[in-house]
Image 1 (cartoon, rainbow, N blue to C red):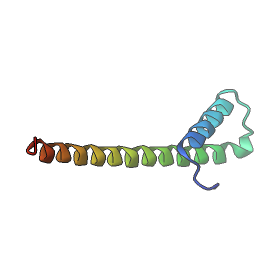
Image 2: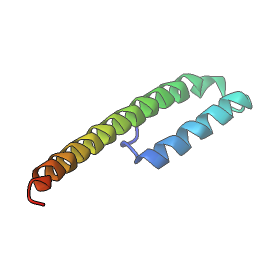
Image 3: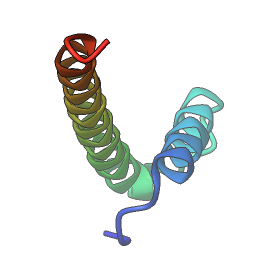
Image 4: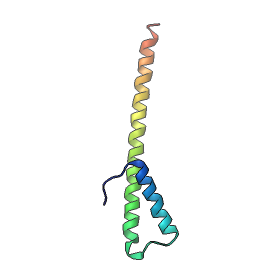
Length: 74
């Protein structure tokens, strides 16, 4: 498998693979590899989204905590 691409690249590659499969332009000899690659990319994207979601939640929690601590100073 190729190295893990960034989210945008992975999404574009998934779209290309899906398009090839829908248009029946994928050779049957490589279909299995394309499906495996798409599954890997989907998992990769989900992990990136989950990690990003966790990071955003942490930032918001820290921000809310600072706001509450700062509210007593006003």
